[in-house]
Image 1 (cartoon, one colour):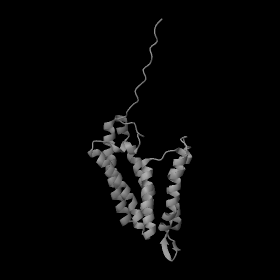
Image 2 (cartoon, one colour):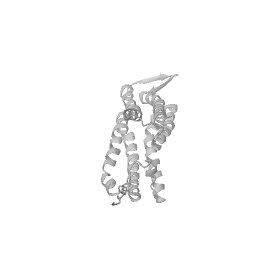
Image 3 (cartoon, one colour):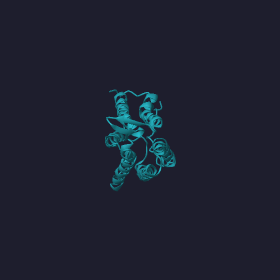
Image 4 (cartoon, helix red, strand yellow):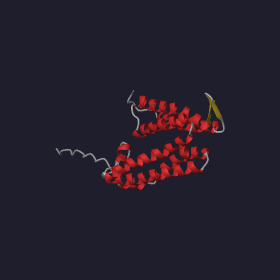
Length: 208
């Protein structure tokens, strides 16, 4: 393990590569079935089975080469193992489709508990990536908790009413865009509650 800065392209590949590979593999195999030990598995189940080790290897490589893995990535890895393995074991893709709902609701619950305690646990989850004053973190936490609840509802609505292919594209492509737009819309908040580093006092030279 090393603490050296990881090349941005390598980091992006390890973080987003498995998801992109998942989408591509699914689009290729979605209409196929695979017979394993006398049991038929759909293309989605087959891709999930292949995706689990790929995702974990990517997380492990990220940790090994950068010396750091975010708390959200750790939580996502746990959810992938629990829901992914359950889906393959029971041959039921619905469990995997519920994974995003569980993640969103868990994050919303965590943030909600923190808010009830008068604390912003979003700052802890994001590991201080955004320099905000405490009141700014509280506002952002409330908005993010609402975003997670709405995202959970959207995931349930989509996977239960739309086609499997639509759900895959929605969850892997549309939702990241929604999150990006959400944080982009918070620029005003970031500016109003920015925690600026204290200016260094200039040493005054003594007059001779």
